[in-house]
Length: 317
Image 1 (tube, rainbow, N blue to C red):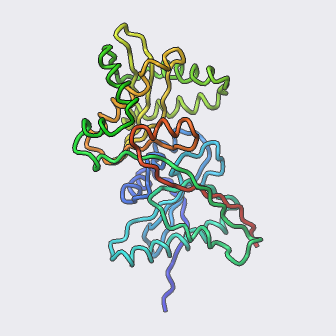
Image 2: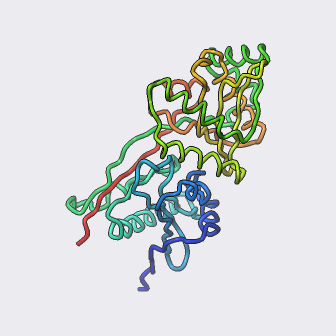
């Protein structure tokens, strides 16, 4: 019997990395080379090669401070029956994790919500706890699916009443939105919002946000928008990221003095309207893991979707 030849190989080509991601349902904007590079931290992109074919990939990043949702493991799609797909994906992920756990002492992944079979993570060193196991943590995001609605107008009348009232209020008062690259204005609004909560943002945090803004605008996968009243006063700002057929609500901020103006809801709804007009499939609220923010995002008729973070520390022989 010929044994399958498998190996972990570090990926040094952004083109090869992004090409593999295009064909995996576990990929996201946070796994693209452009986004990973803009974080300006040490991380590794690795492929799992089986019989000369790339069948899986992972981002090796042991710093949870720089971990983003769905920034973990992705598997290629197998063109087989459903049962064969499940079996092959399970085998590939199990073997990949086994190799990773004997190569890296620490592994932290945030998994795509499309990766639902977590048994390979549960079964690493199943009878050898001292060698290290994965801890699995449950998180939630919320998704608006355009397939559920005939149009944006139909969607608008399914959201929480207060959000629709805020939308109508802003339209009546001639609020308008603008897409621009005013990154410093965004940072001012963003910082003011946190300062109002007595949260001081360090330079590292601000620089990370700036890098994401700049890269998204430069490489045309982000839309930075601002909401103004009829007198030209800016109230609120959003950064929406786009990848394949998905939109991601990356950042949102409002000047504290305008929290009750309705601009926060109006601007987000304007961006959801763009999402519908572009013909995209899913608008991802990117997390509903705190009570107040979670309730706000769900009020836009978004469906709660579970995803998992996993972390393991391993001891080599």
